[in-house]
Image 1 (cartoon, one colour):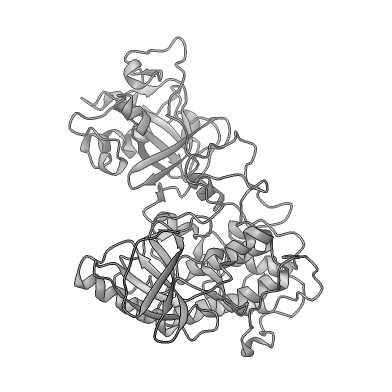
Image 2 (cartoon, rainbow, N blue to C red; image 1 turned 180 degrees about the horizontal axis):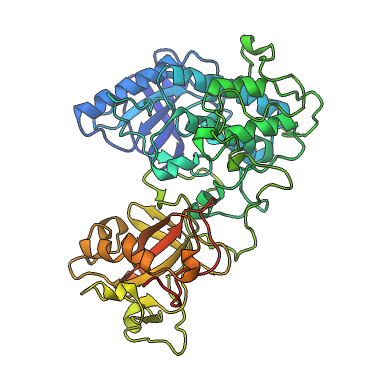
Length: 538
């Protein structure tokens, strides 16, 4: 196949092995020692000497991990003449576990646990060296020429410290395996790697990441973020102890999650897989993942049996009130995700396979989000004041008994028909939002709508929210006054945000924005309209 002609002293480049959004991987021959290697060339340039120093510092840390049996060795690294960094790695002809899952399906319990133990040991070694991985997934676990497994793509994210900046060369995560806090721009931490590794083990056992639909249907990024908040879904046919370990490692709140990769390693090593006969890779040769010698004995904090281990995993803090965190509640009596609403529309990139997005993907304050939707419009209700509705995209609005209209000079109005939303996702200021039936669970509800300020004509939410008129209209004060009597009965904290015109509405000439509110309930959702025209706070 054709490829960009690169010249790198000491190497003969042969072919492209793979290409993604941020890098291209080539098969190459290292001439001095006569071995085939993988040459990974980043597509982004290091713009300054400082960037170069940071890259070399972090790739040196990756090199220090190369002696671990479950880390892909780094042989060389540097910067090309056009300022693109590169790394030379061991060539793994077996491809990745992601490839293998796609071809053969799930692994056996023993294979998945052994791989989990080996990779967890590698992650623990990385954390001890001050390096976070931040993108653990089946696609980043390689199968070497001897059938062993090893984690790749280390060295691009240093551990956050007051005197150290995170690398500018690391800008991607894989939503299906990313920890929930990553979508809130939380500081990267060891607990995030633990979550991703546990999600990877789960996928090795089931063939898909946690919370993915059985039919293999595509999920939007927004719907996936919502599913990240659901309780842990027990794996069928595996030892209860394994479900318990994964449940604690996949806790939504990192405060209640296993945060030490060594603890996860030891817990996986204690799972008794001898009586489990779930098949996996029936037509594929078995893979090997050597359990470290010092892990042969069962750690004292878990009994070597299929019974459920202690409810609080080692290193996992108890809640101050003694209650179990909602993320770890299981069983038939536990909370169930709402699956009875309308089918959510998936228009963002599918994440059933490896999909990378900018880490600036966040969801708004309440911690919930949802899939994208078509342009947010509503059918005007009859008998309501509809003055100016054409300019509001056909939404029925009114100024009567409307607190937004009292904010002088902004043209604020209230919608006369409740307008609810399942969630909001912000990707660098571009909003994706899904309409929801107000009578089923939803997150946000519109409490005001107004024309864009003349000096604030933008559909970028991050720019729009800075405008003083927008902040004034979508304020906490206006929002609280807009609540109906039913809204005042909700004792949870209320939060306000904005929805600018969608890209299609902007192209169609619609220049209005919405002020929306959400109640900080236990699951971030609420049922029923709370901002109707009746009984508003005077």
